[in-house]
Length: 217
Image (tube, rainbow, N blue to C red; front, side):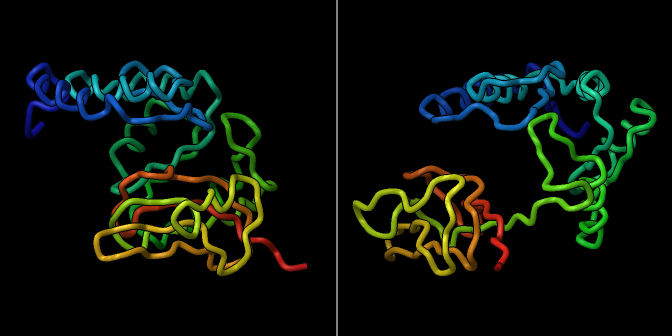
Protein backbone atom coordinates (compact mmCIF):
# COMPACT_ATOMS: atom_id res chain seq x y z
CA UNK A 1 0.00 0.00 0.00
CA UNK A 2 1.02 3.62 -0.27
CA UNK A 3 1.51 4.03 3.49
CA UNK A 4 1.90 2.10 6.71
CA UNK A 5 -1.87 1.93 7.25
CA UNK A 6 -3.21 -0.63 9.74
CA UNK A 7 0.25 -1.41 11.15
CA UNK A 8 2.04 -0.74 14.44
CA UNK A 9 3.40 2.47 12.92
CA UNK A 10 -0.08 3.99 13.31
CA UNK A 11 -0.01 3.59 17.12
CA UNK A 12 0.21 7.38 17.78
CA UNK A 13 -3.06 7.82 15.89
CA UNK A 14 -4.69 5.15 18.07
CA UNK A 15 -3.75 7.09 21.19
CA UNK A 16 -5.21 10.29 19.72
CA UNK A 17 -8.45 8.56 18.73
CA UNK A 18 -8.84 6.98 22.17
CA UNK A 19 -8.72 10.44 23.74
CA UNK A 20 -11.11 11.84 21.12
CA UNK A 21 -13.82 9.21 21.67
CA UNK A 22 -13.51 9.00 25.45
CA UNK A 23 -16.57 11.21 26.00
CA UNK A 24 -18.52 10.09 22.95
CA UNK A 25 -21.98 8.66 23.66
CA UNK A 26 -22.76 5.61 21.53
CA UNK A 27 -25.71 3.28 21.12
CA UNK A 28 -25.78 -0.43 20.41
CA UNK A 29 -26.23 -1.14 16.69
CA UNK A 30 -29.76 -1.80 15.42
CA UNK A 31 -28.49 -3.87 12.49
CA UNK A 32 -25.92 -6.63 12.10
CA UNK A 33 -22.39 -5.21 12.02
CA UNK A 34 -19.30 -7.23 11.16
CA UNK A 35 -15.93 -6.13 12.48
CA UNK A 36 -13.00 -5.89 10.08
CA UNK A 37 -10.75 -6.81 13.00
CA UNK A 38 -11.77 -10.48 13.04
CA UNK A 39 -15.10 -10.81 11.21
CA UNK A 40 -17.08 -11.04 14.46
CA UNK A 41 -20.71 -9.89 14.73
CA UNK A 42 -20.59 -6.90 17.10
CA UNK A 43 -23.68 -6.12 19.19
CA UNK A 44 -22.20 -3.51 21.56
CA UNK A 45 -21.76 0.09 20.48
CA UNK A 46 -18.92 0.62 22.94
CA UNK A 47 -17.14 -2.48 21.65
CA UNK A 48 -17.66 -1.31 18.08
CA UNK A 49 -15.95 2.02 18.78
CA UNK A 50 -13.11 0.27 20.59
CA UNK A 51 -12.58 -2.03 17.64
CA UNK A 52 -12.56 0.83 15.13
CA UNK A 53 -9.99 2.76 17.16
CA UNK A 54 -7.67 -0.21 17.64
CA UNK A 55 -7.95 -1.31 14.02
CA UNK A 56 -6.12 1.80 12.89
CA UNK A 57 -2.94 -0.05 13.88
CA UNK A 58 -4.12 -3.57 13.04
CA UNK A 59 -4.81 -5.48 9.80
CA UNK A 60 -8.13 -5.38 7.94
CA UNK A 61 -9.52 -8.95 7.92
CA UNK A 62 -12.03 -8.78 5.07
CA UNK A 63 -11.43 -12.50 4.64
CA UNK A 64 -12.88 -13.11 8.10
CA UNK A 65 -15.87 -10.89 7.31
CA UNK A 66 -16.62 -12.97 4.24
CA UNK A 67 -16.40 -16.16 6.30
CA UNK A 68 -18.99 -14.74 8.71
CA UNK A 69 -21.24 -13.67 5.82
CA UNK A 70 -21.18 -17.26 4.60
CA UNK A 71 -21.91 -18.58 8.11
CA UNK A 72 -24.94 -16.31 8.68
CA UNK A 73 -26.44 -16.97 5.25
CA UNK A 74 -25.84 -13.72 3.35
CA UNK A 75 -27.29 -14.07 -0.17
CA UNK A 76 -26.42 -10.67 -1.67
CA UNK A 77 -23.85 -7.94 -1.14
CA UNK A 78 -23.74 -4.32 -2.33
CA UNK A 79 -20.38 -2.56 -2.20
CA UNK A 80 -20.79 1.19 -1.80
CA UNK A 81 -18.81 3.65 -3.87
CA UNK A 82 -16.09 3.57 -4.95
CA UNK A 83 -17.13 -0.04 -5.51
CA UNK A 84 -15.24 -2.88 -7.07
CA UNK A 85 -12.40 -4.21 -4.93
CA UNK A 86 -14.40 -5.93 -2.20
CA UNK A 87 -17.00 -7.27 -4.62
CA UNK A 88 -14.16 -8.71 -6.69
CA UNK A 89 -12.79 -10.56 -3.67
CA UNK A 90 -16.27 -11.74 -2.69
CA UNK A 91 -16.84 -13.13 -6.18
CA UNK A 92 -14.19 -15.72 -5.50
CA UNK A 93 -14.83 -16.30 -1.80
CA UNK A 94 -18.65 -16.24 -1.76
CA UNK A 95 -19.87 -18.32 -4.71
CA UNK A 96 -23.61 -18.09 -5.22
CA UNK A 97 -23.90 -14.69 -3.50
CA UNK A 98 -25.33 -12.01 -5.81
CA UNK A 99 -22.97 -9.03 -5.94
CA UNK A 100 -23.25 -5.39 -6.97
CA UNK A 101 -20.41 -2.87 -6.97
CA UNK A 102 -22.20 0.48 -6.74
CA UNK A 103 -20.19 3.02 -8.72
CA UNK A 104 -22.65 5.55 -10.19
CA UNK A 105 -26.11 6.95 -9.33
CA UNK A 106 -27.46 5.14 -12.39
CA UNK A 107 -27.08 1.88 -10.45
CA UNK A 108 -29.32 2.90 -7.54
CA UNK A 109 -32.42 1.38 -9.12
CA UNK A 110 -30.56 -1.90 -9.57
CA UNK A 111 -29.45 -1.76 -5.94
CA UNK A 112 -33.03 -1.25 -4.78
CA UNK A 113 -34.17 -4.23 -6.82
CA UNK A 114 -31.41 -6.35 -5.30
CA UNK A 115 -32.41 -5.34 -1.77
CA UNK A 116 -36.06 -6.04 -2.51
CA UNK A 117 -35.25 -9.48 -3.92
CA UNK A 118 -33.09 -10.57 -1.00
CA UNK A 119 -34.35 -8.67 2.06
CA UNK A 120 -35.83 -10.82 4.83
CA UNK A 121 -36.65 -10.44 8.49
CA UNK A 122 -33.14 -11.66 9.43
CA UNK A 123 -30.02 -9.67 10.23
CA UNK A 124 -31.88 -6.67 11.59
CA UNK A 125 -33.74 -5.64 8.43
CA UNK A 126 -37.41 -6.12 7.58
CA UNK A 127 -38.55 -5.26 4.07
CA UNK A 128 -42.01 -3.82 3.59
CA UNK A 129 -42.64 -6.58 1.06
CA UNK A 130 -40.47 -8.57 -1.29
CA UNK A 131 -39.68 -6.42 -4.30
CA UNK A 132 -40.97 -3.28 -2.59
CA UNK A 133 -38.42 -1.86 -0.09
CA UNK A 134 -39.36 1.04 2.14
CA UNK A 135 -39.21 4.53 0.60
CA UNK A 136 -36.80 6.20 3.01
CA UNK A 137 -35.84 9.85 2.78
CA UNK A 138 -33.06 11.66 4.63
CA UNK A 139 -33.31 15.17 6.10
CA UNK A 140 -29.91 16.87 6.17
CA UNK A 141 -28.45 19.79 8.11
CA UNK A 142 -29.10 23.17 6.43
CA UNK A 143 -25.74 24.44 7.70
CA UNK A 144 -22.95 23.79 10.15
CA UNK A 145 -23.38 24.22 13.91
CA UNK A 146 -24.89 22.35 16.85
CA UNK A 147 -28.03 20.30 16.42
CA UNK A 148 -30.80 20.98 18.93
CA UNK A 149 -34.02 19.01 19.14
CA UNK A 150 -37.21 21.03 19.43
CA UNK A 151 -38.32 24.10 17.54
CA UNK A 152 -37.04 26.67 20.02
CA UNK A 153 -34.79 27.12 23.03
CA UNK A 154 -35.90 24.88 25.89
CA UNK A 155 -38.38 22.91 23.79
CA UNK A 156 -38.57 19.16 24.14
CA UNK A 157 -37.69 16.83 21.31
CA UNK A 158 -40.26 17.34 18.58
CA UNK A 159 -40.74 13.67 17.78
CA UNK A 160 -39.47 10.19 18.51
CA UNK A 161 -39.01 7.15 16.31
CA UNK A 162 -42.31 5.74 15.08
CA UNK A 163 -44.26 8.99 15.34
CA UNK A 164 -45.96 10.69 12.39
CA UNK A 165 -44.75 14.16 11.40
CA UNK A 166 -46.61 16.57 9.15
CA UNK A 167 -45.19 18.48 6.21
CA UNK A 168 -43.54 21.64 7.51
CA UNK A 169 -43.29 20.35 11.07
CA UNK A 170 -40.18 21.44 12.99
CA UNK A 171 -37.93 18.51 13.80
CA UNK A 172 -35.17 20.56 15.35
CA UNK A 173 -32.70 23.34 14.58
CA UNK A 174 -29.04 23.93 13.87
CA UNK A 175 -27.53 26.61 16.09
CA UNK A 176 -24.46 28.56 14.95
CA UNK A 177 -22.86 31.92 15.65
CA UNK A 178 -24.82 33.47 12.83
CA UNK A 179 -28.15 32.33 14.28
CA UNK A 180 -30.46 29.34 14.11
CA UNK A 181 -31.73 27.45 11.08
CA UNK A 182 -34.80 25.21 11.34
CA UNK A 183 -34.87 21.56 10.38
CA UNK A 184 -38.29 20.65 9.01
CA UNK A 185 -40.11 17.74 7.40
CA UNK A 186 -40.79 18.31 3.72
CA UNK A 187 -43.77 15.90 3.63
CA UNK A 188 -46.07 13.86 5.84
CA UNK A 189 -43.97 10.96 7.08
CA UNK A 190 -43.16 8.47 9.79
CA UNK A 191 -39.97 9.23 11.68
CA UNK A 192 -37.90 6.05 11.31
CA UNK A 193 -34.62 6.91 12.99
CA UNK A 194 -32.64 9.81 14.41
CA UNK A 195 -29.08 9.90 13.08
CA UNK A 196 -27.90 12.57 15.55
CA UNK A 197 -28.62 13.48 19.14
CA UNK A 198 -29.33 16.78 20.87
CA UNK A 199 -26.07 18.71 21.22
CA UNK A 200 -24.18 16.92 18.45
CA UNK A 201 -21.97 19.08 16.19
CA UNK A 202 -23.09 18.81 12.56
CA UNK A 203 -21.82 20.02 9.21
CA UNK A 204 -23.81 21.28 6.24
CA UNK A 205 -25.45 18.42 4.38
CA UNK A 206 -24.96 15.91 7.21
CA UNK A 207 -27.84 13.39 7.54
CA UNK A 208 -29.95 14.17 10.61
CA UNK A 209 -33.04 11.98 10.49
CA UNK A 210 -34.51 9.23 8.34
CA UNK A 211 -38.18 9.49 7.32
CA UNK A 212 -40.58 7.17 5.54
CA UNK A 213 -43.09 9.19 3.49
CA UNK A 214 -46.70 8.56 4.57
CA UNK A 215 -49.01 7.57 1.77
CA UNK A 216 -52.13 9.67 1.42
CA UNK A 217 -55.39 7.73 1.85
